[in-house]
Image 1 (tube, rainbow, N blue to C red):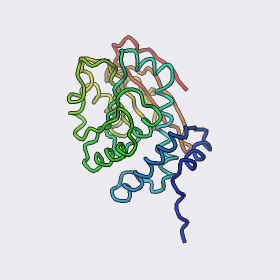
Image 2: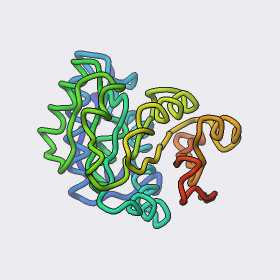
Image 3: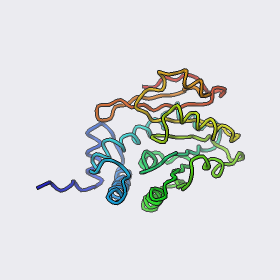
Image 4: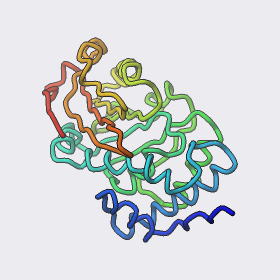
Length: 245
């Protein structure tokens, strides 16, 4: 007879993360528990993620968000995000199950964050999860990714626009997408990709799409190396190589 699933509690989350040298506050653990409860409940009705157990979701998928939060809070990246004046506006394309966006916002509440999702049921899930969490300055855009920037952003609003993709498109295609849909906003822009391969190994593809790699980080999850790569337009004054571990 199968054992019952381990209850989703803040203490269980804290202990499990600590085993991989990741730490969250008590409030953050409580919010992560609410998110995982909501996701697990919805996942039984619609296929949001492949994992069934919340422990697998935490170990494999939420872990990405924690590494991303640390990356965005690092002095070099935080400085870039604030270099345009005002707080950044992050556009999370293909938000799906709220990964990395919702756990990220629990740890990194800077600026505005928009979860962009075209699939109606997933957009409803995202809205419910946000309602339960009351995350500040975090909203859902239910519609096509191509339409979101023009409807959400205006040239007179200060702050850098950060386009983010975890699984929306392969990174070379996302850079091309961002060049087309974020490049003519009249505002400073950066693009962040989460990948299993290292974009920095293909500088031709990066430069050919009109971007320069300015920061990167490699980290391990479940024994596999993953990458965070931050790009700015080639002609941007801050487009300087920056190697991060």
